[in-house]
Length: 313
Image (spheres, rainbow, N blue to C red):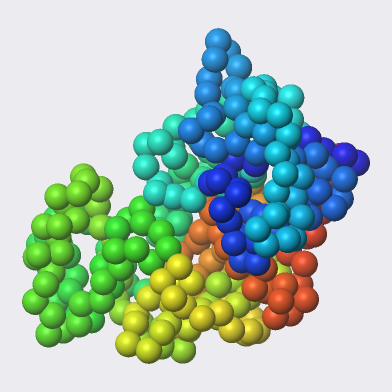
């Protein structure tokens, strides 16, 4: 089977080829005989009834500084592709949401991964709200008094943007911290979105586990350990990846959420687990498969393409 695959992602020429999950997925696709076409989200368009993209056919190789070759620029009709990958990084703003609406128009005849309707309706920090028994105490609010009351109940909290990513804008406010009102003023001055606040989990000092699921089934995990003196464990924020196994609690969480992910076309998902608690379900642009492959030899990209090829067959 040879599939025509389009990659909607951030500029591929500047990715870290030893860490970027999209690069690894694309490299695996190429090895399996699939053709690749690359474009950025700003080159996606709806034109007179067709969903179009302007970009380049590409060839990839694992050579630092020489990892991509581009064919001639072309405008293509995405309905003529077998698979489109929705893989640009957040922010999850109206620009991002608009791309999901456009890709909705070609899915599922063209398989969009992950399903754009449910990416739009199940973003990282909102899907977890459907599983309150698995998550730490959580509130989503813009109202300062609501957040103050939550902090009064739980003392030590994490405050962060609802649609942020990569650890940006994440603050820990312990029982003695006096900065809540100032942070609220700063966040609400930037946009009109709510904030998410969760009870702080001391187990984060041992790491924030990223568990990878493919079509609702766990394939492995890596542990992300924060730097000394740092709360955030995201690798974008300096977190250190470590080898780790799946615990019975991890498997229990995956069993609880797996059917929902599978039923809603979320083929490649990364969940965040701190201690015994699920904190995020990442469906927009999860990472971690290259680290998992180095630690455990688990070829997650191969498993992803096996699922996609079966669906296309």
